[in-house]
Length: 145
Image (cartoon, rainbow, N blue to C red; front, top):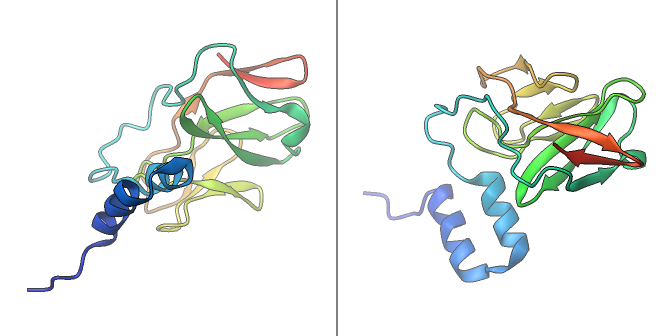
């Protein structure tokens, strides 16, 4: 029997020992997503309506940024000038945090890739797209809701 801890166990211990926001973010990014049974639908972005997520100037046209909506990690994109969309940053495959990469969102854990415009799967192993998060533009900010 192998007594070595699994990656999941090690991350849980790091959260207990390390505390602090950085460890919490790491745990959120790598928390177990079960067997991929997350439906990937609905607004998983947390946060109250009207909460500022990111300044519009920080989101490049044809690109995206990582942000938070309340306590929930999200990714925000500007597929075309003036069009802003957001998605839960939790990969529906196994719960890792996706991040912007070369005009799409990519999961560093298993290589799933998602479209900026609609969160659709471009490459698996994920079989479901990213969960949309409702956002609007208010002044010079992307806000929830």
